[in-house]
Image (cartoon, rainbow, N blue to C red; front, side, top):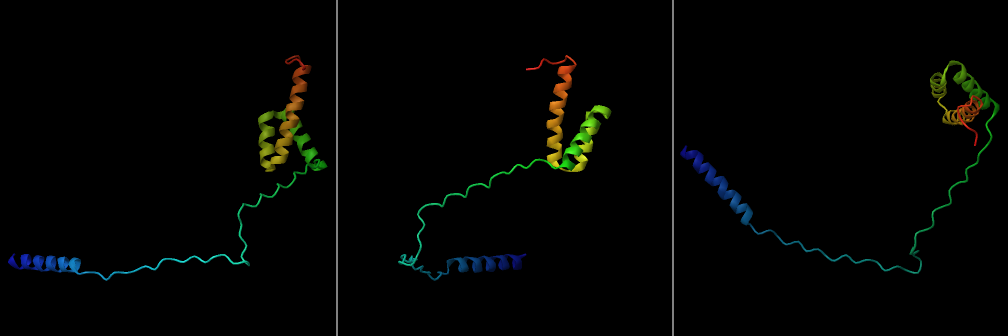
Length: 120
C-alpha cells in the first residue's frame, strides 16, 4: 500500500511540474491586407437576378386529349375513384391536372342539367 502511495505522489509531482513549466510565448504578426490596384475589379452592389424564363403553354397533343377523355369516360362509367387511380398510374401530372379540369367542367354541367345546381 505504501508503494502505491509513493507512486501516486510521484505521478502527482510530474503533473504539477508539467503544468508549472513555462511555455514559450508565440507572437502572431498582424495580417496585412493588400490594397486594391487599378487592375482589380471591385463589386459594390449585387448583380440583379436574371429574369425567370417565360412559361410557354402549348396546347396538349391529341394523345393527351384522348387519355383525358378516356379517364372522363371511366369516371362516369366506373366511378371517380377508379378514374383517379388510373390517372395516377399514368405518372403524368399534366394529364392528372387536365383530367381534374375536365371533371370540374363536366361534373358542373351534369349537376346543372340534373337540377342539383343553379347555373351562375
